Length: 160
Image 1 (cartoon, rainbow, N blue to C red):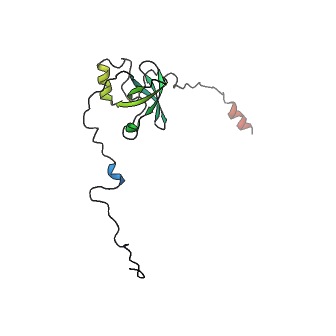
Image 2: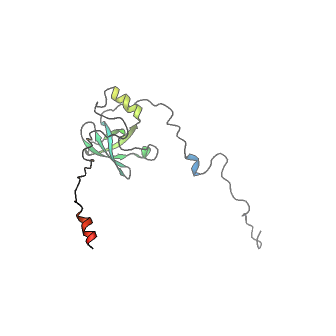
Image 3: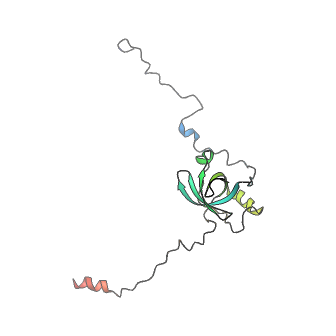
């Protein structure tokens, strides 16, 4: 009691035992170990491979029907499932916008290989996370030409 006013400063509230702070949720990924059933596409859905991450929960994907679509990652997957360029995903197509779609599911590499074995994915698809479907790799290649100066710059420096 300070000046007749009761204070409870000496007893700070403690978090409940077993709950922990915000770091309690880190490092645990219990869903990774268990096998889930392979999900095939239905009407209004399409398989695709991620070509570019755009940020803000959006990405660009090349669908296996040949169209390139702007895709939105649904809220259920947004923070829990990390999607990278080259991943195989299942898209929900929009009836009213053909150029846009919603990401329903991300397949891990084992599931993508199984889909390829079942004939659901084209044979040209690379299941590796780093190689992207349809990319020839020629547009990213940089070529340098050798330029011979014949020592002209060195002569100018020596003349000074």
